Amino acid sequence: PLCCFQVIRCRAAVAWAAGKPLSLEEVEVAPPKAGEVRIKIVAAGICRTDETLLQGHFPNVDFPVIPGHEGAGIVESVGEGVTSVKPGDKVIPLCVPQCGECYFCLNPESNYCLKSHLSETQSLLPDKTSRFTCKGKQIHHFLWVSTFAEYTVIPEYAVAKIDAAAPLDKVCLLGCGFSTGYGAALNTAKVKPGSTCAIFGLGGVGLSVVMGCKAAGASRIFAIDINKDKFAKATELGATDCINPQDIKKPIQEVLTEMTGHGVDYSFEVIGKADTTIAALASCNMNTGVCVMVGELPSGSVVSVDPMLLLSGRAWKGSLIGGKQLR
Ligand code: NAD
Ligand code: ZN
Ligand code: ZN
Picture (cartoon, rainbow, N blue to C red):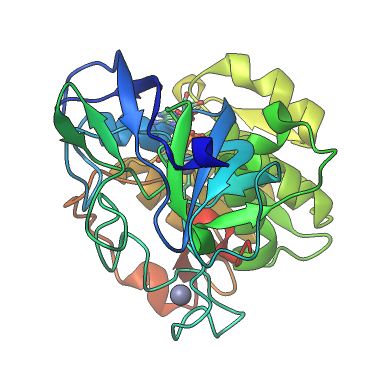
């Protein structure tokens, strides 16, 4: 129908400049071009990464921008050549695209596609133009997702079709937070049954790591946060020990080493700070310990590490969006 090829006027939260609060604006959303999908966003989540973007600490982005990289919605219209989804389908936008053709997409062991923001900008769609305008100005996309808009346009290969019965307000967390944490435990660390785990940071992502460790059969799960209000939820999800580093005199890595005798088998940094990055690395055991970095430090940060921590056998890995292809 003709309506599908019209510009849609709707509301969106626009970040005009780094360090400025979001402002609610009326924006124009152009129709999808070839290979693109226009989606009505029904639910969006907020992850700490959106805050990092707002502060101007996220790499490879341009302002003004519509943030939001976690959401779920319904396909409103599709551009020429789109075959995997049709109007009316429920979908989750993927903040890591899955082009299906690059070196990394062809390897099921990897998930960071060469079309992602680490390789090229996703501030504009692949044809280097934006579908958003506001007050006569071009507004940039964020990770090609921009879920803080009522309608958004995304390349087909960054959209996953989901079950028609899926509750969109719940499954929107699969777009980032839940997949990231759960996948870090199962895909990146590959937590073994009976092992010990420590999770630094109990936000939405850290709690999803707790769930992943529990599902993998970990026997002891240490949940660490400076906000004790997070402990009830962590315990409900499987944490066996909750520790507030501000309540103890010794550094947390020493306490964890004493409590386990040698350090945990797996540790996860899910905060995004330099000191907790080092503490998490030093908390896993020196032979077979695996530390997974999930938290995002401000772009350009440098963390200095005593090489002895790695020399004895520890492994230090990163994990983005759970380490698995989602499409
Ligand atoms: P959040 O802000 O909801 O949670 C962070 C938690 O860490 C809070 O509970 C806070 O109290 C706690 N905390 C802060 N400082 C602490 C300290 N010094 N010691 C112990 N606890 C401390 O954040 P979130 O949305 O769960 O995201 C967590 C991190 O993961 C962020 O850095 C985010 O950017 C990153 N992230 C990474 C990926 C990825 O693909 N790797 C995806 C999503 C989010
Ligand atoms: Zn790819
Ligand atoms: Zn996120």
